[in-house]
Length: 127
Image 1 (cartoon, rainbow, N blue to C red):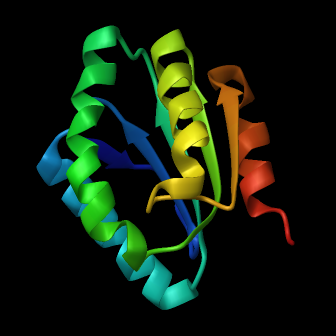
Image 2 (cartoon, rainbow, N blue to C red):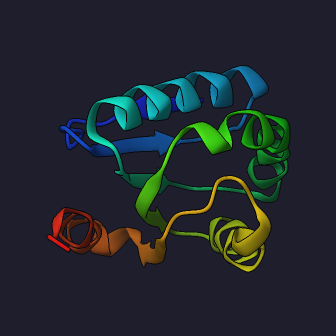
């Protein structure tokens, strides 16, 4: 489901995500819990290339893992980096439910794939 990218370091987790699976979400959230235990608040860079409507639908598998693992990790900043309306739609929905959802970054921004460096700089900034 996800690939850990080279930009991952300390409290910044950089991943590329394609189709969502329940097992993939469990593995990803285990990594988030581990990093939160080590560093406290984490920053997540999530690259979502070439999503289709079908890809979008597979991420409904994340609902149960969100409820189960969400309270166990703390995302400070989240950068979604994509290139399709389906990736942007999932980001926008997440932003709307964030106040009541267990996986709720303090700050969220969506970047076009051409702005991936800008997203990484934003995640790495102090304060």
